[in-house]
Image (cartoon, rainbow, N blue to C red; front, side, top):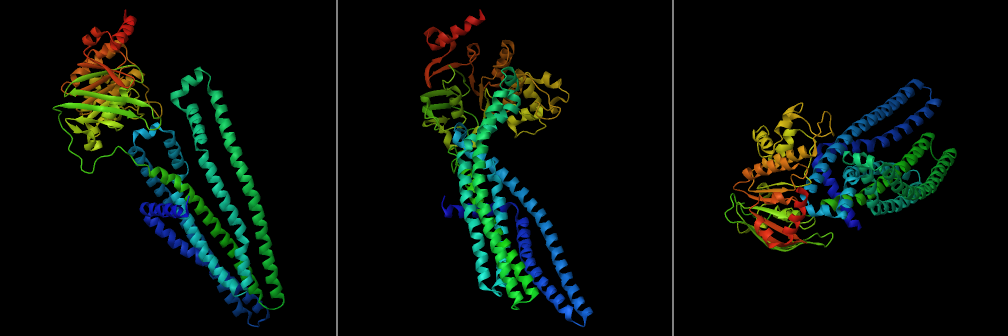
Length: 598
């Protein structure tokens, strides 16, 4: 990584801090100036105090001298009190700044997460990038800002101490600089080594998070107990953690040895310089107060210089890890709205057309759909059938523009869907996928999320629940539509899989859409419940274009036309009777299923 990139990341992070916590940043800079001046003041006041005490020993007007000493001590006390006050206030402001920046960056990460293409979620590299951004990098802009503040604060104080030391002897100032160089070199070296190691082990670290998720998540609890997988997953978690721990400790041990050597050089420097100052005091070159002042200036100057270098090294570390954050933020979606989108058609007249559509996931280069051409009339109900992996769900995702085709085009009423605003287009589509979401929130939220543009208190929520056949179950819950579902939160009510599926159906029904898609929506229902749902679906979808994906071919008969996919291509299409008469793939699949109902 170039130094120019490091500086660019640093400037971006400071800009983030400034935008999200401007007042706190200004107060931090003010406190910086105060805290950098106080040490210089106290060192000089201590010199005046010691010299006054020395003079007072031989003075005949001791009361006058003592009053002056009390004044100096009072000023030192006042400076110390101000230092403690400002330090405490600085800590409070720093905490406010940190929380505001963290909240702001969380919003940024969340917006980026929903902005990136769905295809990113098919790529393990994306998860590595997201993990690095979430685990630590999100805190780095605040850390980088604080490191900058500490560098400036300690640098101002250090320069003041060096100015005092220059009045004593130029050699002492030079020694001060040389004493901290070894520590800086070692710190930068191991910072880079630790960062490279951390980045190389992202996948292993994600494995530990995954095993922890398996062991603690409710989705896996039954199977883990039934198959006695707990001890195995614990062992795997422990093995990966042990490898990571040993490697990180190896780097830490080498860093510790280097730091001990650097500290040894620093100690020799401090007390060698003190001996030189004591020698000059004994021989009368400087006063006892000068000795105290110069020694304190040297010791504090060394501490400030070390703090400058430490903060500078921390700043260097921060810029390294900031690359993880900005690597994620720089991800750009390819499925985007045009600069001047065309208005979405409010009511289909012609329908939907797919023209030579092919699709390949970039992460695998595996062809999912190949040269699909299909015309769907406005208001027509289409059943998509085929074996698992035939491309049915992928085809729907392309129509929803969750992906763009690798080649070919999709038209709504003769207009390429890439010419519409993405969000406006999706607003006209209602989908319930087979892996629908179970929101552990209120019942009314679970349904209302299907159309958040409606009033949350709308009667459509209950109407949709009735249409989905779930209203009687909801009425039987402790708080009706205000009942919390799932077991993640207190007083949550768990539903059966079939009941959850009806909630998801209600969510699909509430959406005022031209296109309705049911992707295996009734897989957890019995035949009677499935039949009732599809009868209601036919009524709700009347006049709308509908897609039905189901492995139960008996339900496919409800569609106007059946499209059969195999290996990513359309191999047959027609009505149920037509396809049976052709004795092709559909007829064979239907024959196999019908055996189970005899």
